Length: 347
Image 1 (tube, rainbow, N blue to C red):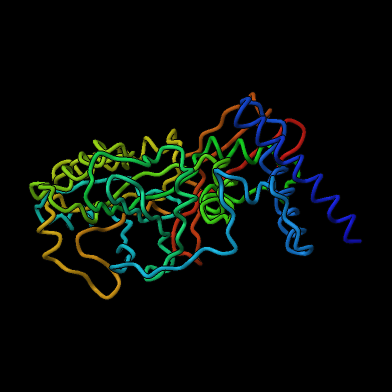
Image 2: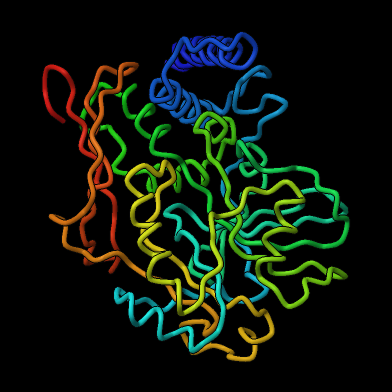
C-alpha cells in the first residue's frame, strides 16, 4: 500500500513539474489551473500520509514556498469598516463643503503591505480587522506589485488584492464541472491569496491596487490625499482609480463611475469618499465601528435595474453576461453574479 502511494507521489511530482516548466519556461499551458490545483492537493495529502517528500516535489521547489499554515499577526491599528450610504444626496451632504477624493470600492481581499529599506518586508490580510494572516510570500507573486521601491524608509500602505473579471472567466472556462466553478472573483481571490503554496497564487494572476497610505516617515504630503496617491504611483504601485470632487461636481462624478462599471474589468461593489485634507480627516477621529474621514457609497440593490454587459468569448466558446448585482443579506452588501451561457447548454 505504501509503495503504491509513493509511486503515485512520483507520478504526481513528474506531472506537476512538467506543467510548471511548460507554463513558466516555454509559455505553454499543458494543464488547466483547475487540473493543476487538483493534482497538487492530492500530492500534499499523500506526502502527509506517507511522510515522504521528494527533493524535486513542487511543494518544496526553490522559488516557491509551501507552508503548513499562515501565521497570524495583530495589526498596529484596527482596520475598521466604513460607514455606508446608498443616497447620492447624503454623500454630497457628508462633504460639508470640504473637497474630497472619490474612488472605486474594489471587491477583493484587503491587504496591508510594509516596505523597509526599499524592499517588501511583510504582507498581512485584513482578517477580522484586528488580526490578519501573514501572506508575504504569496504577495510576492502578485502580477503588478513592486518588490523593490525607491523610498527607503518604512512605508505602510493598504490596498485591495483582486482578480479581474477576464481572468476569472478564463479560469472558470477551464473547469468542465459546473459544480466546481468558482462563485465570483472575490471568493476566488480570497482563496488564491491565502494559499499555503504561493505557486498556486502565482497562477491566478492576482493584482494589487493601493487605496490608503498609512505611514511614510519624512515625506511631506502637504496635507493632501491626492499627493499620497501620486507618491505611491511614483514608487511603482497601481492605485485605485480616483477623482477629486466637491459639492458642486460629486453627483456627476458618481454618474461617471456608474457608466464605467459596465465595462470595468476590476470587481467593484461601490465607491469610497475620503476627505482630501489629511489633517481634517484625522481631527474627526472615529466611532467604535467606523472612521469619520471616509464613507462608502453602495449601489442601489434592485437587481432589475443593474447594468448587464453581454458578449461572445471566442477563446472559451461561451456567451458571457456580467455585472448583474443582487443584495447579499448575510454580508449586507452588493455582490456580483456572473451568468455564463455555453454554446450547447447554460450554466
